[in-house]
Amino acid sequence: MRLGGYGSCKSFIGWRSRELMAERYDPLEVKRRLPFLDVLAHEGVPVRRSGPNYVATCPFHQERSASFTVYVGSDPAEDHAFCFGCGWPNGKPGDVIGFYQAKRGVDFAVAIAQLASLGAVPPSVKTEWRARENVSRMTASKKQLDKPALPQLRTLNEDEQEQLAKLRGLSVEGVAAACEAKRVAFCPWPAWEPQPCWLVTDSARYVAQFRRLDGAMFVRHDGREIKCWSKGSPTWPLGAGEIGEQSAVLLVEGGADMLAGYHFLEGFGRLEQVAVCAVLGASMRLAVEALPYFYRKRVRIVLDDDEAGTNAAARWTEQLTEAGAAVESFSLSGLTTKEGLKVKDLNDLALVEESAWLDPELKAAFLDWDF
Image 1 (cartoon, rainbow, N blue to C red):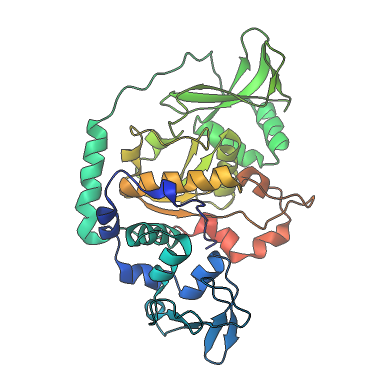
Image 2: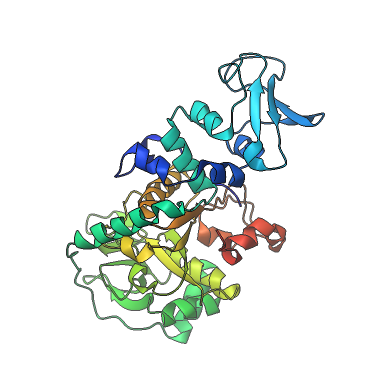
């Protein structure tokens, strides 16, 4: 899969100690899931073949010749590297975890936790009880979230569904599926100047986000224009309470991307197996009240291809793995729309050329949940 980057490592340390983070994952399995060459590519270190091995310009000292040599084993867990220029690491070969530590400037626990997330490595069996303990603790610590006062809502009719699908570049079938799940509704908004709006919410009704059905901006009392209007507790992941027995979750940011999630999963015939959840803001932490719903689920995070999205993926991965979920992020980097514009979010992905779907990794983002 496309490995999602996580930017700064500082925000990755979670609620528990570094030692417990390290114990959650089997280092051998981490190395087996993440071949050394894949991690070098992820870290932006170009390599070339040299006989049976691979060489690169050493990322730890300045040099003109390629002295950093990677030895690839029959089992990725046996991959190791050594620099004949500076002697990294300490004059003897090093593994991929040691490389990541040195490259990112983090300790072993942080490195193995981040690599486990990149490689979608689940917690080891011996630490399963800790995830259950965390779920019990989270459940016990629940507090009542404030529910906003919402106007009278109704389901979008067929014409409105078609209008919304056209506005967002999505299929009518995907929009209809979101409406059937009662995740999308219609109402006039705001109260002082009612406009036909579509909004995203869920049965919990902790949060809702409104957008104009004609695609225009809202105009506030002060004259400022905004594209969407949110009410309630934005930390609540829409759809968390409805995951139920579904074993997989697609987690996105924003109402438009939630709608796009239904578009793709309906198109690939995966709505019966995969739940769609959305957080209405990349700067948020997930509400602790929602985390138990993700216990033992496989969660794929698809966020905006920018710094805010990268940081959110790291933040939510930390929380969800602590709650006992297996988490993988999918990067939209390098994709363009039919108009040649950068694909910034999941909704934009619906606007790519059909040829882009020849990439098997792109299809696997919606079809392959075996991680």
